[in-house]
Length: 466
Image (tube, rainbow, N blue to C red):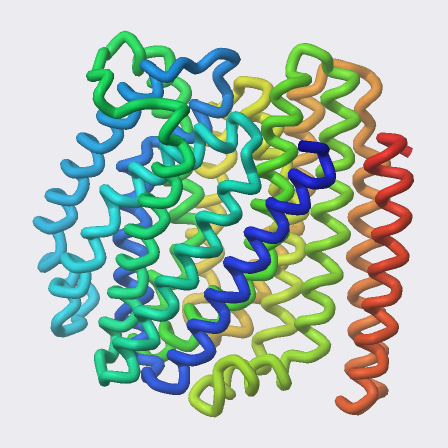
């Protein structure tokens, strides 16, 4: 399958998955209270952390291997399942202490139920990595779309029957089960689970996956430390509104970046011994992600009132003022995300540990310094912090690339041009125009995006670096 078809399938899967998740949030936001979303936010934090331990970064290790046999896949599958069961038991033991810490009555039972998804998702991750390694992105997209539809249907059904917060939990479990079934079906001919387990098949992956695990854990805490802080200090209601808004806006980048990464990571890995070609592919990766993510957040910021009213309803109208600042933060945040793929390709996963340890330290200091402020002050501090991260990522690139062909000046120019243009457009439209005119501007912006897309097709995809 051609490059554009593979990338198109990856985008279709990510976009469809995000739309379905937004649809689920939009419907459930009218049936559940912010407090119930706050409870679910803590459940997802705990379960997400458990899933990271269970997967141990082994999915990326599979993709990174130059050769990977069916016997290795079978051994890794059973090894991963064993680890995930241990993590499940461990989370069950911690569920009640977590409830005591957050002072949320009944939280422990929700955590226990949510934890059932950990072994299922861990097994599905192995199947997905095998497909991704073979660039069968169309099969991954089909599995993710079908499973997400099933999960949304179950969640809505439970919510209609007054299931409360259990609607999201049962929907998540239904999604996990259907995703694993479909991915296992698509990988049935790639490996068999009855070939047994051999530790020698797993050993080549352990070093990379363990380092990846530490990196993912640090990144996870960096990404979710704000929710932990808000829940503990401001309570479940504030955490519910903030987490729903954050989850909704993260969906924008979670549509674009993983879709691009799922294509460019294997592509960059295939050129890991040819640095000049690697630099060319990496630049295309950065430019595409920067343009698509930044202008997507621009559209969201311009139509924040309409989007919140449409998707979340009156219960969450208090968070509208946070949307533009949130969009600026996330646009800057993802501008440095491509470097994490680069250090994996260069077989330097320890850079992830250094990066995320430093990020977590700075984030903790930032949250402490603004702990007496409101949510706007907190998000504003994040904007400044991630602006600094972008320049730190440039230093890391200079370290990873020994070839003189890589120059950071071009990347800095792209970053400032795209970001400045977006901020300028937002300021002009937001300050001087009323909402009905946004419809016209939105149409013109779509035309501009289409024109940029044609330009990228010619100058980035077809001709490489320009």
